[in-house]
Image (cartoon, rainbow, N blue to C red; front, side):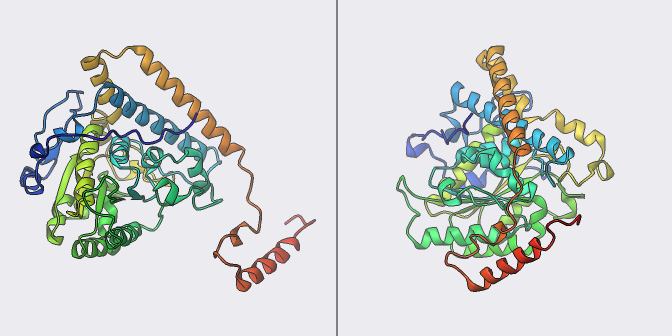
Length: 398
């Protein structure tokens, strides 16, 4: 089963109906804990609600697209759960779960235009899916055999970044290049960059340095913060005195908070933010208010620092369940569709699992290949020395 390519439709609307940057930003008022300031188009009960600022950016989302979004999230969750199981079985050195963050990632990923560029952290399996990266290409990272096996320029999706927050500098520099090369404007081929990071990364200097440079150069970059409430074992209130999206004001660009468990709202808000950047009004900070339902990684034990009641509360806001309920209640979708999606997810999980189990160990000299574009005498000497050392153990019990 192949990974679906981007199917994001192009919207067309009277330009007079498009909310201006000032109108959108002026509407971002409310409480600090996700009340009136939280952009939401689909409630946890699966009810479609209106938002005059962003309805235009979801106006083209009909039944087919909504079904596709549901399918995306189900399949992404399925191979994520399989990755967790594979680590427990000793097939992976570590796995980074995204359970609960499917809407934040799928919505943002599907909002991107084909020419846009994404810079992920190490948890963006859902964004990778939307950019056409096969899930099996993620396995080498967590098995310790490679740093990612896809072509970042072809997929318009950079390799995973393990160093916390470093991708914000990379994304800002790339976006500055887009502007310097004249790729920002009103044309259909205009480009933008989107950078994904977590709430914990906002305490890293690299993130703030990226904010400064992006603001000074009007770089076309969307900073997309998935606030999943916990930076490993530290809650958000230990990271900041104000809601994360409000930090953007100090750098001179707009920030907005969206319900990160609402795939429609994430799609609409990210479309708006990317459009702002492509047309020269960037940067923008988006805070996707969501929750990490699983551990930070498989080496983490969340029961040591958070209460079970908190987890149970967020289960009621499950991003997949609210779309399923909406499909049934408001669109009359039959069980046959959900069974078909489940079968597709089982097929993907089986392929993902079998690929992992069958992965051969890398050759000893692989780490020396493709270090530089041109041959390097220094690297070649290191390679020969290492292979000689490796060969010295042949025939021994070591």
